Image (cartoon, rainbow, N blue to C red):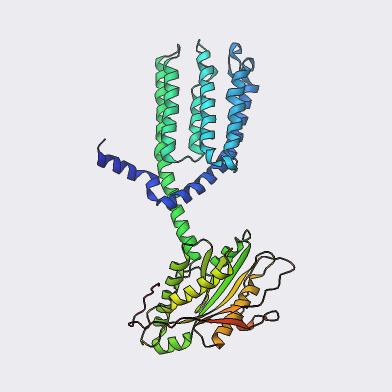
Length: 423
């Protein structure tokens, strides 16, 4: 086969639809679903093989009964049953799920063919060729990737064909039966191909919808749903730190330059936060509301929190001003240094960050205020949730609005436009 032909063939494989990173994620989902199918099918196959053993005299010639060959029962019934059971478990052996199931199927096929060869002295109906073929075709039902499944089916059918051609009872009718078995094996391959491509396309659409539902459309950072889910997954963290950023005099900015200009600058701020936090798994940015953003850090030292918070503020301040060169975009920030995760209410932490933000605003804006008070633990240890009330309406009984204010460096003046840059 020529080089271009091989490239075209590889491009047709379902696995070529996704990027390497998406392929890894898809296979994890694909294999998880496959284990569910295998957990159901292994029971059905176990019952079927058990019936063959219990009623073997009705299916096999008495001289070749399975009950007289315990080694066949072990190899053809017990061992495959255990392998299929192991292939359906979500344990450390999950990565071996497909090899385990395939091994169990090949063992069943081999044993059935062995019994069929032993009964080749005229007792053709004792184990019809349909039995090993049906077990082999069970691979179609347990969701094995197309590029893996096709070789497995062809190898298994080749074994059946070789065994059949070596039997003493090889007759023209046997040849017709083998040809029919080949057709039955090959025809479903096209269906499997189409099914997997459909699964991959559906998965891509679902991932796109999932991301869209958790992304703020204007700024490109996470929305409140994404933030809630991110925090709900932080139960394994030891500490959490929060920074709330608010654009200074944003209402006046909208009044002076128009709401489209305000939207552009919010989008530019989102670009800065996304590019600065997207590559760090311990750092997450989201839009709280309007011109207010939040950044969450997990398990990092307090000194690093301050450094990152001030770096983000400086990066936002470096956004090129719009409309007037002497009106740069600035933000004020309130930062809560790392606190223990266990027993905390996120609404308390955000309220404390809001209090520090208020201190930064009162101190002249365009600066970072570090909260100096702690957050009371929640006695009932309920999951963290957001308060839906605006900051001014949130209870502040346990909040001391004083904070240590850190002035940021002067902002450079740049030509009028609205693109984001990072230092």
